[in-house]
Length: 420
Image (cartoon, rainbow, N blue to C red; front, top):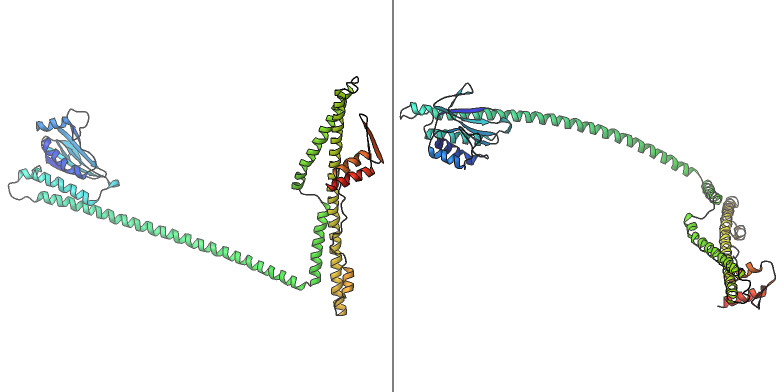
C-alpha cells in the first residue's frame, strides 16, 4: 500500500481539525482523534475534544479518517526520513494511504489531494511557504501536479495491465470453449453415425420381413393364425380358473351360509339339550318352547343347507358349461379352417365356387352355443329334497299334529311359489 506523505509545520489543534472537517463529507468513516495522555480515541462530537479545541493548543497527536481503500492521517511532531517517521519538534506529517486491493477511483484520489494541498497553501503550513518572500512560489503547485501525474500514470499502468490480463483470460476461455464445442460436435457426429447405422439395419430387417410375408401365400398365413389361436385356447384349457376378483366376490356368500349353518345347528342342539334336561315337564311351557325352537332351528338349518347346495350346484354347472363351450370353440375353429381350405381347393381344382348346399352341410352348427338349460331349484324344493332324500314321503308328529310331505306335495309347493 503506497503512502503519500507531506511534511508540514505543526498547526494548532483547531486548524488541523478544520482540514479533516473539509475531508469528512468525501469519506464514509468517522474522524478519530487521539490526544496525548488519553488511552482511547475521541470522536468529532466529543465534549472533551471541544474543551481541547477551546484551549487552542497542540495537544492532538494524531487524526485518522478512512474511506475503504483510501485513508487520511495526521501525525503530530514527526518527520519523514526514508519512508520512516522520526520525531521532530516543529514538523508534522499528513499521510494519504492507498490500498491497492480496494483502490478507489482516480477522481476521488485527485479531489482528496486537491483539498489537502489547497488547505496547506491557504494556511501557510508548508515549510517552503515560510522561507519564501511574498513572491509567487510555484513549487507547491508543482509538487501537487507531480503527485497527480504520478497517481495518473500508476492508474493508467494498472488499467493497461488489467485489460491485458482480461484479454488473455478471454482468449484462454475462448480456446477452451472452442475445444469443447469441437469435441461435442465430434461426439454428436459419432452418435448420429451409430444411430443411422442401427436405423439402416432395422430398415433392412423390416424390408426382409416384408418380403418374407409377401412370399407367403394365404394358406400359410391362415394356418399360422389358426395354430396361434389353437395354442391360446389349449393354454386356457390347461388352467381354466376364474379370476381372483370373482373368487373374492364369492367369499361373503360362503361366510354367510357357514355362519347360518353353524348358528342354526348350535340353536337346535341347545334346544334339544334344554328339552332333554326337563323330562318331568311333559307338556309344560319349557317343553313346548324347546320343541318349537328345535323345529325352527332345524328348519333354518335345512333351508340354509338346501340353498347353499343349490347355489354351489348352479355355480358348478356354469363353470362346466364354460369349459365345454371353450372345447367346442376349439373344435369349431378346426372345422372352420378345414371348410375354408376345402372351399379354396375346390375353387382351384374345379374353377368355380363350392356349391352352397355342400358348404352349408360342412359348416352346419359352427359356433353355435347349444347348451342345455340348467335346472333352477327353488329354496323350498331344495329343502324338501334334502329332507326326503330317496324316500317317497315323510310323516312328522308335532305335539299331536301330524305333518305329511311327499313328491306331490313338493310340486304343489313349487306351483304355489311360482304363482306368487
